Length: 190
Image 1: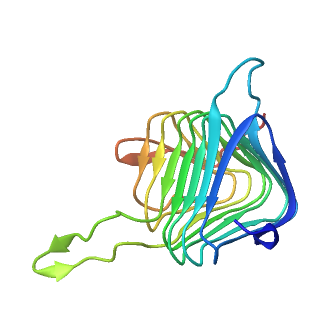
Image 2 (image 1 turned 90 degrees about the vertical axis):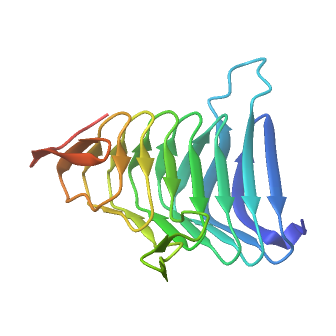
């Protein structure tokens, strides 16, 4: 890792492992706090791994809790605004993931924009990756997964242990596996 690959304020607490290909970049216009909330005496680690030509862009203050992993695959882009990702969060961007301001991810949330393998349906290859967009002030509940091609609208809530495989309208609550609409015209605050 070269010194000019990380631009901006990266605050590391405890054991933060950063693995970057020489063509990868982290651009921070705000602050990224890695291993946030690390309990005293713990050696839990936070992992940030970027492959060839990968970019991690932070526009705001984003808190990434202990035990979390960010991986941006070859040519992928991860865009984060302000927010908080709790313990055990995994974000894997093979194409593009954009998370807007006010994000709140509970423990063990998984966000992937790719299947990671080629799927074949009716003799035709399916797209491996599709962008994921998470709007402003979105709350994703504990143990939930947001998968490729999903857009979650502003103010939405994803219930605990849900698997989101289709778009979530703004100000709606979804839950289940696969996630289904539960409520409309909802708001939340922390």
